[in-house]
Length: 287
Ligand code: PRP
Ligand code: ZN
Image (cartoon, rainbow, N blue to C red; front, top):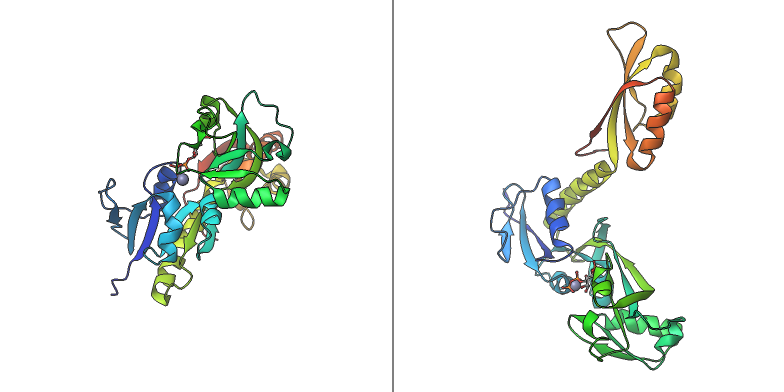
């Protein structure tokens, strides 16, 4: 038995923390208790977990201090480190935006001409200004960017917006989106074969969990006379399972439906005479 472990870096607190832990849990990876420490390991998977500031994660992965990491695309693109983006994770959705005082008359990027903009994202802001051909002063600060306009430190800010409550509470309004972002899994570009094998196992589990999150398992009873119509309403993975019921003339139909089309399908199924419809969550989905 080899004792190599895959070292993963995740955010130690903040927007991505809970969802990162939940993803590992849904993948069946249990962590040894010390949640508040900087480092722990999995009980049932060859993995070590480092808890770090999200902004530092690309650097640790580039330096191979961690093999893989979970971070926002915003941080990945800003830091521009040599890491490989392996998988989008579908959580931590947010945007990098320009915000100005609520009462400002914003009439497009030209508003920013020769103004002072505070941000922790100087690289992405510079690229935006370059693209718009607007000269402006970038004032890089390391945090609490949202208070800069209120204390006269800047005319505008560029910061992450998720719910928008931080901007709102600071009297700011969002006027321009520079980048849409979500959490991604990154890896060191030169992982050895043994670590790649563990990563592949993890990715297999992540994909199964993510597929299952958007699908439901549906069971229903159908009169045989309408079976054809009912089956045509169900996409299924291949085709639905149909089993005869004890009661003559009826069958039980099992299938998988997508969350997005779920209510639509249920209505049509009822109209087509389906009864006793049960919908259950799917935990994992292996295709
Ligand atoms: C971002 C940003 C705001 C907040 C916005 O911080 O700097 O503080 O999230 O979220 P809201 O629109 O829901 O109010 P981040 O999570 O990157 O934490 P950090 O600044 O500590 O790295
Ligand atoms: Zn951050």
